[in-house]
Length: 93
Image (tube, rainbow, N blue to C red):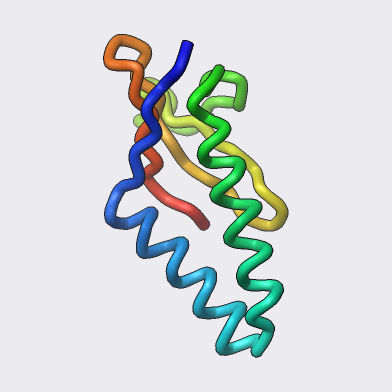
């Protein structure tokens, strides 16, 4: 089943912050682009089988269905909604 993947404003801000930090603080724009590409690729892969990653173990998030997608040194926090076929990306940290 194909899900729609939506980015929250906070997740979008997180991605921009990661890119800017690697690009400007670490002065490595090529690595910043590569990291952003890997994050986006994994986020977009959640359009199929978004429940394949583990649930966040602490309440109240566990009962809300929050899941954790590890990507390199980062984690993507998201909630899949199987009724609406939507995956909402909440944070990228």
